[in-house]
Amino acid sequence: MTGALHLSGWRYRAVILSVVFSALGYLGFSLWGGWQEVSNAVSKVGIVGICIALLMSLLNYGLRFLRWQSYLKVLGYKVPWRSSLKIYLAGFALTTTPGKAGEALRGVLLKRWGVPYLQSFAAFFSERLSDLFAVVLLTLFGLTLYPEARSMIVVGAALVVVGFLLLSHRGLIEYLAKLIPEHSSTKLLGFVRHLFHVLLEAQYCHRPGILIGATLLSVLAWSAEALAFHWILQWMGADIPLAFAVFVYALAMLAGALSFMPGGLGGAEAVMVALLVWVGMSSADAIAATVLIRLVTLWFAVGIGGLMLSRSK
Image (tube, rainbow, N blue to C red; front, side, top):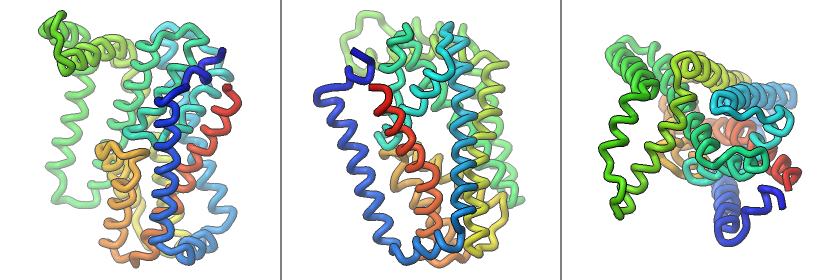
């Protein structure tokens, strides 16, 4: 029996229902914005523009896969790249689960390659942290448009550096882990203990060289989609600077992640629409641009993931 088939019972149904309800919710959001406006946006962007945006999304996925392979390698597991790529992309099928937790499905599929759940979850945890660092850095880049935000940029950059230092300090993590009682029966302390076990495993992915390289890949990956967002806005006739487009996209991804909603749905879209309207776009065009960029990024990934997952069974 393959790893994919172990996702049975109520957990599997709950995950699938999460994806279905996310899709229905997005359909409702699109209808609220108006299919006519979305159709007009697609016409303005054109087939070539849509293909370019999809290629930028593929670049995003490719760079993040390279990061994933580097994590597996430092954890001591050499999974053939073709199989690993198929498993990695299959995880995107469940991107629209709360907090992207469904992407941890990769751990189930990696079991056949001898990767224990703790190690695969450590890689998944490292991915989420790396993505968080990247979108924070891109958000700070967007703030460079505003001189009055200079102090915020300095504080944000300092927090990222502090985060790097803490994650790469194994001795500190081990010391904090020892402070937690081993035999406590409370669920909260049990969860915290498990979190520190994951952190200790993930620390192999957080050595300074690996951490800096992974963050660079993450910044490049999310910059690709932010650039696609900027081009879509330009093709729609909106005169919006690149730095502001990057700021909008990165802040929307950050808001979506912090909301812990399925795929960041709702939070990400609300931020995008609000900021685009704030700089002068009509609400209809702002919603249309938001729907379009999410279709060629989030839902494109879900589609690829579904295809790969069906081939993993």
